[in-house]
Image 1 (cartoon, rainbow, N blue to C red):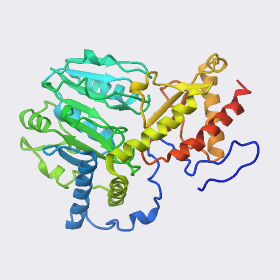
Image 2 (tube, rainbow, N blue to C red):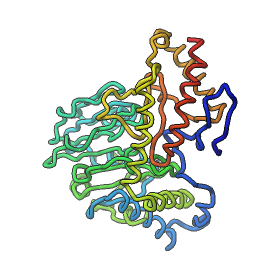
Image 3 (cartoon, helix red, strand yellow):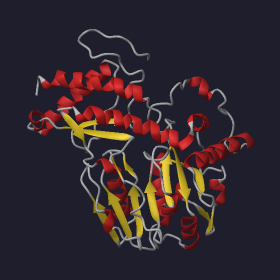
Image 4 (cartoon, rainbow, N blue to C red):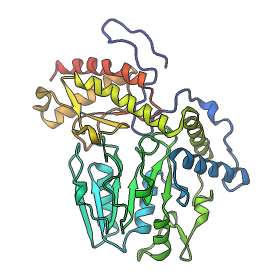
Length: 391
């Protein structure tokens, strides 16, 4: 929807695109259904052109992200969740595990490791929403599982310097809301997972799994004692299954989604690759930071700018009169504010995650225009004033 003038009670033009959801995320600027006209609908993903499209996704992803030679990259089922679960079920067991969590998804991986895989030697290193655990406590003689960017907390690790270069265990990194928007130190990461629906603005249901040579060596030297569902199998007869990483997917992907992923990757390359994608996210974060500096009613959930996310930007309501309300009333007021913004077609789906403190979550990945973020912030103040009278 194009920006337009509004009545005097309103603060100004609406964002050109009101989609600030943290997943599925906004499509790239200028996207429309014509981008999918070349999709191989009705063709097998195992046909010659079908395989070629999937291999193109892999190779373009490798180029944009700067994935080193020797790392395998493949399309896998069930979005980022499926990719993480494949890694956990296939690789964990021969060493103790340090599992880090500071938001809901990291907590979910801790639960799966301890309650589903039931590994005997697991250390859970956690922190509350808005903070990081003490990264200096991580033992890299063990396998380490962590999210690079906490999508539901707006907290990311500042860099890869805390990861030991001479580690003995594997590092398994859920990078779904970081890939294509943050610089990943590939030499410190053995497993990286992400999906198309985040920074590329692609469609959901498909994940990407990158494996270092050390991770491949683990797959070939270790067989988990538990039954392995077909969707998780990365070996055949004890040998690494190269075909999964050469365009032969485990199950049937959507060729419409494949075409959409290619459109996003071509756009990324056209605008300047990873550096340009990072700059776009950082510019939107800077716009919100400038606004927060003068805002009286909300703050960043991530307290330290060093670990503040540039993609899933999480804000907490901070006005004392609001915080004195019972939790149920806080939730009701927040819902009312979100409803106002949606009805005005200003912002959709920007509520804080259900387990996080009451507030907002504004996606600022590379497909979001910084000008739309700038247009949004006066509307946030306007919506707050509407509900503030009832606080």
